[in-house]
Length: 284
Image 1 (cartoon, helix red, strand yellow):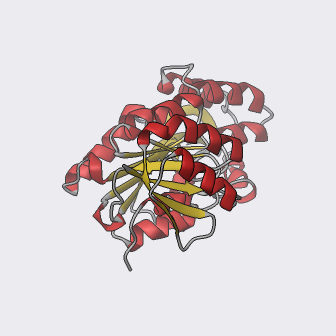
Image 2 (cartoon, one colour):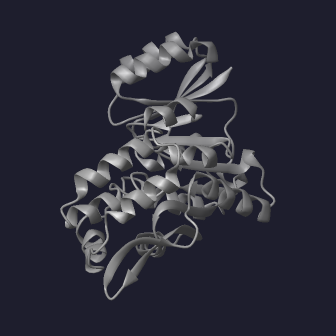
Image 3 (cartoon, helix red, strand yellow):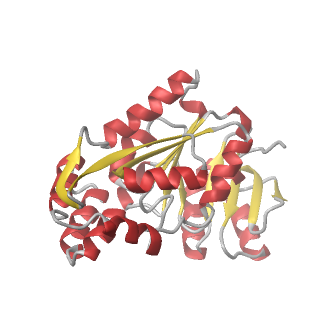
């Protein structure tokens, strides 16, 4: 039997009763947070029926064999674009130059997994940014970059319990450095856009942070901390996050593409990012 965590913007007692009955549960335990409930003794065999009911009600669910202590976790690895933040930065840079449709189409195909070579897709998109003034990056940051709901709370909760935070992005250092500073993240890795005479050249400097690089950075930090996959969390939304997510027991699809939803152990489609914290026992 498992614990079943339900969370979402809105659900009522009758919905909880339906889920508990479907899951043949032993009991229901409301948690301190609003709109979060733990159903005790849930039968994992009921997952498909519970999933259908939750999707209809726009509620996230998670089956857990046990409730781990968050303080026993060691690494929280996160994607940036469309995960920690609401935008795809490269698409917004392109928008400043009137080239968003061409760039966004490649981004979407890459995130859905339709373009298997992320590095090649990134080079194609960056090439379309040739000649864009570097000030466009500052405008995107100042005018368009916003954190997804619960991002700051998730990071603060991780830090409070001694979990190291790692930002691994196929995006750009201009943005990851600022996001790292604002959220006080422990580590951040991403790509560097080449700039000459105040404009983008359409090239990336050095090796590209692709799906395998993301996984490498997670593995390297886990090894340094003496942590196994059971002590790692990884959150992403696109196909290039899957190799990284496979290194973590808590692989989380956040508002993710179908290919990511299918392979992740958990999903947050309705609850904010800090909904992750509700799967753990928190000590203060």
